[in-house]
Length: 76
Image (cartoon, rainbow, N blue to C red; front, side):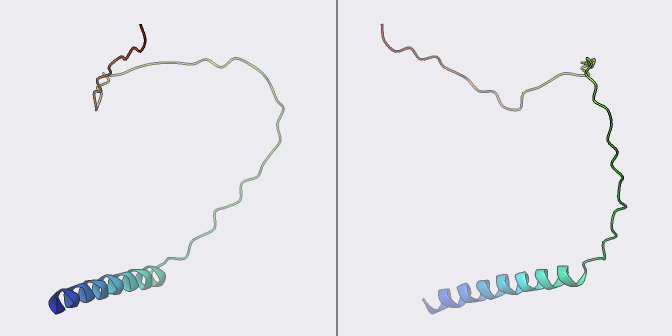
């Protein structure tokens, strides 16, 4: 019983130490982020038109998982 408690305590200490190490390491190595340049927004006129849709397929489609379905009928 005492050995089991010691092992659990060591595992908890190692996990906590790893968490503290990861948090402090990320905080100290965080690079300075450059601000993205601002993008001007310009209003435009609205128009309604049809947009062509092109459907092209290359290759084949293969299912990752096949599922068998079974019909159920209740009643007569």
